[in-house]
Length: 335
Image (cartoon, rainbow, N blue to C red; front, top):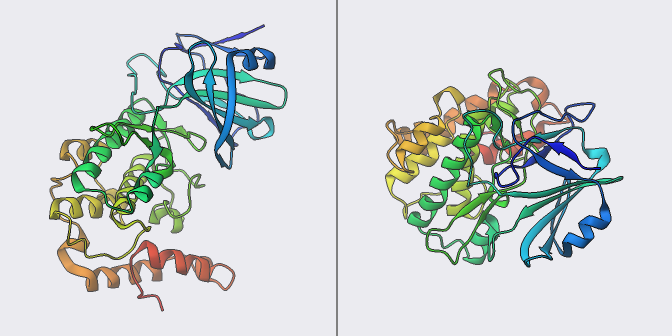
């Protein structure tokens, strides 16, 4: 027998799986969607094809819905990795539908795994592959179009109470054959609720964590998302994480946008609403880097390194964190 979960099946929602709870939590909302338990019903409804990708929480396969040949993505998550299911869409009265995230079609709760069937935009690819296919030749106007949509989607997610925690090129799909380069944010495997208090354990991709994670001072949802958006924009223009470039081919507004997103002090980073109003350009204050130049920036980075807890610079961890912080702060001042 199907269990009724409160959500509309036409709403763009997602399920999140994590390891922060000891039991499955089913949130109660006003609308409903069926969660199914019959594997034969899944096989009758969908045809699975090639593997699209694999991650820490499971594998994703291409597929089609047999009734209308609609392209879908099917995520397989082993039951032992599922400790709660969190609906990440219309969570409460006043929440708004988010067209910047991938849509949910079906959920199958089977004996050994959970299957999540999601929409798969035709002729789409993730930002990483998009940049790779173009050999890094992405114009500022194209990047601006992509980033504006990511900011809009991230702000609406936060307003709806959802913290993605892993915004990066591999988790943003783009349709390159369409002029507007429409995007969809995918993979909510690390997501959780937005809280006022800081988070202590980082769940996401190493290399996209903000400095406060390395400093073990706790991190907050919005400043982390803003940092990751800046990191993704740097990747688009450098085809390499956190490298020191002159960016002579970019406008000063774009450079300041990136630098502001990756301000070391999370309290000094602009909020998502300010990024949205800036239209990927006009942010009021220039960054430390753009005001003081590379030499001062490297000096400031070295001071940040020196303030790190001693255990992070110990023999067992020092080399790892030292290497990471060198790239993170665009500096060789730690040698």
